[in-house]
Figure 1 (cartoon, rainbow, N blue to C red):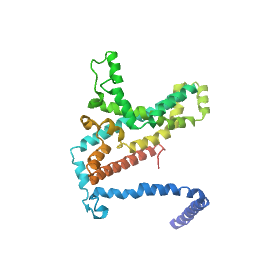
Figure 2 (tube, rainbow, N blue to C red):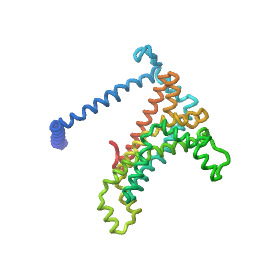
Figure 3 (tube, helix red, strand yellow):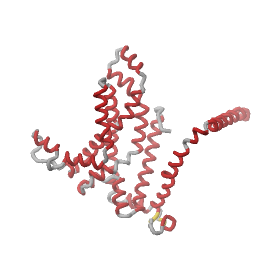
Length: 319
């Protein structure tokens, strides 16, 4: 019986594999177009990976990779037992968590609101204004933030004093209790418009007949949002959620480095990326910086895999 089953199954598998091979050969011109992309990824993404070997060595730039002393997990152990470990991990998780909680749903809400605007001129104006901050460098954005929040002639301090909420100007940029609010608010303002493009495009692809049928059945605009719009763009939302969870340890770099440059903010502004840059690279502790970066990469891959596994249960996943 088993031999008969094997005789039936094996030819089917062989036919499928032959079919895939024939289909691949029949599309070789199209498949060849992928080659430059694969070559680019291999040269610039995979070949540099040999650099992670530094994290297991006392790397010496004069000796190179092959002559530097191997030290195992020495630099990982030094990072885990450093006095900054708890602070750095806490700041990274808190800032990334706040970004995920606030900055992730905000573009979705903006896209839903813009979809309800019937005046095309007003809609285009709002979209253009919200997109523009994305194209500004963090140096310019931090300059804006400094001019708004500064103690001397800062717009916010002048406004709060004019309406009587405060008597003396507040130094927002050098008080730790305000830093997380400032960094999240700045990221939200800079990226909300550009991040909403994907969701606006997804909403534009929804069949208008669904809205017409819902309107005939008496559904209000709010019900149409919850029953048609959001379920229709849910696959896009889940995919971006997976990517955001995978980047949970990427709290940011330029924004935190520039806005958190004041020494008094170090306890709330130091994250993994800025820590590895300052302690590792600026102090020329290359192996230590590589170990910190490799630790972050491993945790990020684990989080991405976990998020994708959970999302697969809903039928939407990256792989």
